[in-house]
Length: 259
Ligand code: PGA
Image (cartoon, rainbow, N blue to C red; front, top):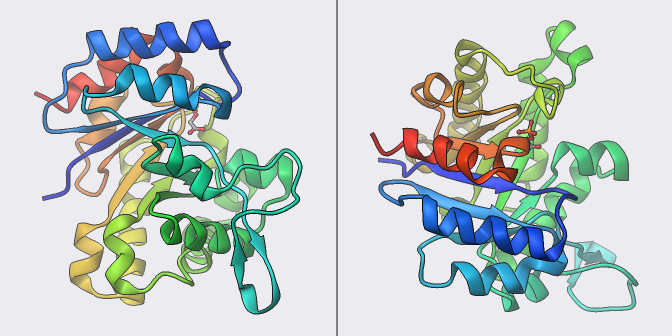
């Protein structure tokens, strides 16, 4: 039995007072039942949001992490990297989760599948649980490359993860064309890719591991489309952007899971 995980990625939105108000309203208005809830604010608000959600059962996540890879991929978590934030720093302010390889990181910051694999390893080394984000572009979908693209991202993202650590990894399938566009994948489209990801995890590890890993869907999830998407067998929650910025819509997505 996989516990659904609903995460709100606040991206580069909100000021501190707005972020605090949003966190307070989510704590007050969101009933937590058989679902895990994660808030993912921008870095400067992490500590404050950590205080506000403390004792509520809601978890904290970060949007990215930095790691320095030396020779033989020896990873360093501290160093002269102005502007960067590493896994132990995130852990020390109360994060449990961290997004890795979000499509906006890949698209605007040139993050490669190789770097994503190192970041997943860095997160696990420092006691964080990575949410590995994958998804095809519109061109890839139109060229029938969705399943192969997602499989490659998965293999490279997990290349440094042994089987016994897979219980600490969450996968998020987010078709790039659906992120922030209002164009949501149909439940059948999502289910097809999620089932494929699970099959790939079974091939990389084993069937039992594949059954335990949670796979979230992300891309224009709203309270209206969440019930159908989340009803699919292999969809274990949602990674929510735009709709996570309003307490009532985020709570509405969470509420569906509690029926
Ligand atoms: P969206 O973003 O819900 O605004 O499409 C999802 C995401 O980027 O995680």
